[in-house]
Image (cartoon, rainbow, N blue to C red; front, top):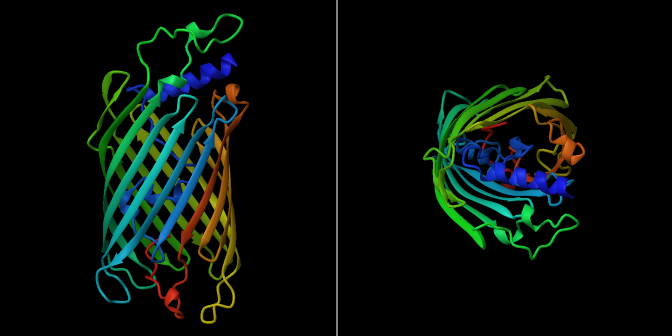
Length: 351
């Protein structure tokens, strides 16, 4: 019990320490691309996209770390042409991250706006670069009433009524405004090979927060990402390799891996007699942290995904090698052929 409490306190202090601040992250980062790069807003096939993520991590400890994320975005046509030469993208990002027994909570509420410039693409094979901005409200809270200290251990048990010897009590509540920007490059070489890559700078203004009586500035967060969709002509198998890099102060996250998606059947173009169904599976490696596996099912415009992390770092000694489970519910209008009004969607602009 003491071992688990020590690990929990250590993880909490890592989150609190001004020299080691690390924001939330998701294993299925590719399912919510506007969360880490505002330029991805509106850059997809369809007229609306939304994703709901839930992550439960370190459940082997006394209290798991839980992260809820919601993201929604849409392209905005600037002309009445069937193919938008240039377009706007708008998005909303909400993330609530709750860490351990002390309920150290971070609420992130952001609004995105992007503008994409056509680089000579076509209706079938778009080619563009997109620039985006993000304005976010960040709030951090900590309940000192849920903390435990060494002085409360009697040697034979724990006395919650014992004096902690600390000057902090009650709840800490601090908020700030964070600014971010990014760019995205997309090119569809043909119907079977597409590329999407970009970079972003978040917390660009290094917003100031007060933790334990000390004013600190959040580190800038640098993000680089790249992904492809690769299929053989008239093949029902698509390879989806992805890379994600996030650097914030002394901390970094590097994810690399791929999914393989199998199309079981396609949506009928005119009659809508049958809806599309596909399934995907993949594996990723997070450098010096974890190996995780992903499974996903796509039906109609909806996706259900699950991933599980297996810890490979030294932390596995405290959590029995368990990492975190992450669930995904996604919605994205897919069909671009003629037919009903529901099917008359903006042409493909993304993976």
